[in-house]
Amino acid sequence: MHTRHPALDRAQLLINHRRFQLAEDELRRGLGDEPENAMMHAQVALCMVEDPARAAQALEAAKTAVAYAPNDATVWHALARVAERCGKVNEAEHAAAMALSRAPRTAVLLLNGAQLLLARGWYRAALGLAERALEIAPNDANALMTAGALRSRMGLHNQARANFERALALEPDDKAVQANAGWAALRRGDAEAAVRHFRTSLRLDPEEAKSQRGLLEALRARNPAYGFYLRLSLGLKRFPAFLKWVVVAFSFLFLFAVSLGFFPPRPLLALQVTGLTLTVLIWTAPPLADLLLLRSAEGRQVLDPVRKAAAVGTAALLAVAAALGVAHQLRPSGAVALAAILAVQFTIPLSTAPRTRPGRQRAVFGALVGLLAVFAIISLFRFAQRQDDAVLWLMASAAGLLYADVLAEYLPGRR
Image (cartoon, rainbow, N blue to C red; front, side):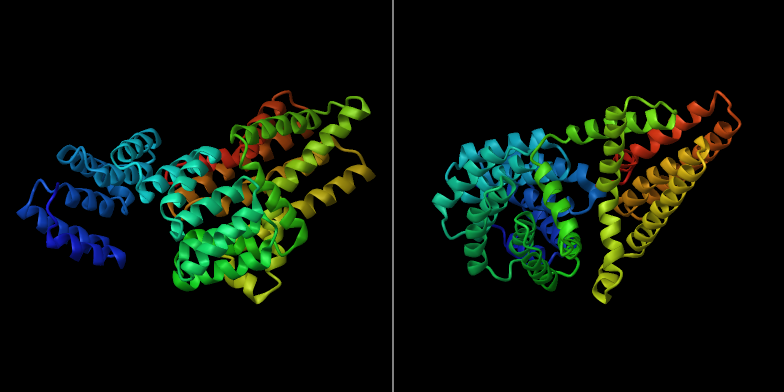
């Protein structure tokens, strides 16, 4: 068993105030006295992982802690947390299991395992661990919050609400409990309650990114149409992520068939139009809801400049597409119809842009979308000239536009 060095207590105070670098400095001075103190190595790792650029070093520090105290559940727990922050999900789950094997009736270890399973989308197994934690610590706000978050995702809204009510009664000033209660309120369709919870969370920590995003979604959800879309979107997260891209792939095939001028029997044409409409609604719902928020002072305060630009740009593109569609109906033209479809497709990268990280990632994303715009313009000119290569330019542009969301997800810098 490791010795409780005074540096650990001093470092913990600094960690509580999010002064991670100062805490690490304090711990390293303590390690000068006790270089094999596993707990101090574990705390150093937890401090280091707060800086994404030092994630690999943090993981090594956590492994060093485990090497010095392989039978200590606490250091295994630290390794699990660090590995999870580094994106090493399998390693995190293994470390969490090792921690539980050494202290099977420790609530915090059960909750850590539940949160790792939650991240995997394995809600039922995660809820089992959370319920075991509640048996051990029935008045633990974190355990109640975790159980409530899981039940909310599983659609058990009444039980989730009861969990959050108890958690808030115990810890009304816990920002995480307030934020999770906000997301649970959104899932059950109570936008006003969600706004209150997110505002409270942001009062406790104005820089909390998840609460900022939650408040924006709650304000959007005051619009009944967007509220329905949001509940559907949150509900779909219970299903495998790849299904989203299956939908996108079919939508691309529909759009591509229309743009090539194929006119199948009426039922299939109606299906294509339906696919186009659903695709537009899925990607334009957030920016169009933001456009409505721009009418209020609160909405203008919550929205950043990129989201404001995306909202206005999306509305403008849809207006252009509608005008081109009317023009095509009055005087049929393949080039005009193609331009209308491309205008709609460009709403996808516009709605995706706010989710890219400022700086290099957003600049690269903008450059790639600009390149797709060049391809689109070339395809229009080649189509008007009835050139055979118009299809190739169109495919390059349309495929890139429809998969802009995937593109943004894998650009460097995404978290």
